[in-house]
Amino acid sequence: MKTLEYNLQTLFDNNFMPKKKIIGKYSNKTVYLFKNTNKPLGGNLLKDIINFCGTIIKNPLRLPVVIYLGELKVEDKLSYILLECIAYQLVIDGFDLQIVMNPNFSIDTQGVTSSPLRFLNPYYIYFEKSNKVKRKNQFLKSFELTQSGKYRKWLSKDDEFGVSKLTTDLIYLFRSQYRKHFSNYTLTDYEEVIVKKLATTIGELVDNAHEHGESNCLIDIDFSHDFTDKRENNKTFGGVNVTIINFSNRNFEEKVKHKILHSSIIEGSRYLKVRKAFDIHKELFNNKYTEDIFWFIASLQDKISGRDLYVRNGGKGSTELISSIQEFTHDDYCYVMSGKNIINLKKKYLESDSDGFVGFNGKNFISCEPDPESYSKSKVYFPGVAYNLNFVLEECNDEKN
Image 1 (tube, rainbow, N blue to C red):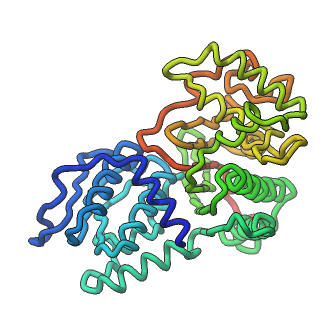
Image 2 (cartoon, rainbow, N blue to C red):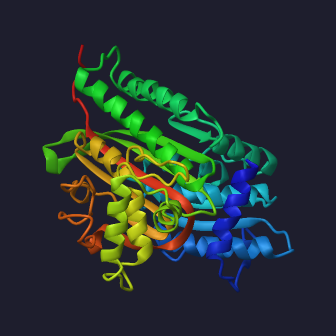
């Protein structure tokens, strides 16, 4: 996990603004104390927590740490996974850490209830109040390994067969969810297609993240079942909730940008079309639609690769992979972030134009700028790339077979 520790430090370095008030009283003890001001667990709150943690890490005084969040809404899966990573850094640095929280969750954030954070939370029924060493070990074990109710894997960029093995593992994992939820259940052909699409897409996205970031990936998947929607005649829905994190000192768009602007290896016609698009779009850039957004979108395209010696067209683009799942979903909430940029992977933005590019505008990629609602700025600078993927699927109300 040394690579993770190094790359997590880049998260603090890129977001750090020192906080003045960091010491307070909790349970009659002097501690480093962070208190939430009614913010949901999302970018704004994470930014505040990172500043607080960056301040105490640089402080030579070692005190217990209490991050008091109280009752709060969890905005998305990626938010609580990033909080886990921040907590990991503090624990590895030797801090006695408690994160006090009572999270409200929905179909896409139910996984917070089985998060490693529960072992640091005094509200958790099995919290080890008097044994901080056991508490630390429980958190670290849960953080690093797959636990009941979810799937977690750290995948090395140097594992030649890692993505292939991951895809195979996920096919068995997704099949097992049907069989756990409906006893003696045999998947239909339609459901088998969904299973393989999900597994293949996640595997390909991890491969893409390895390619662009050149560092290891964290894959975290959880499942939610039996959510009833009154707006849909009380139909029952389940969620497949996925986070892929690749901490890196290289942002997602950098390799494609360098290859197309500074390399002679752009023989494929698609690369030349991206160069043409850049020449058009650079006249459209402004304070909101920036050059980084253009190259981020270009890097998500099908058959565009950042590999230095990859002359032929690249593999499947992130947009095509995700849209191949969205045709099966009732709803979804998907985005990808790198640096301070977020690209919204909503279904309506992922239609391909006549050249096979995704313009994020319902028109075309080469000559039209993306819809302003398809991208945004994050409060947190993320070094590398992170995917938040939530797919809502209708579940059977009755057992079959």
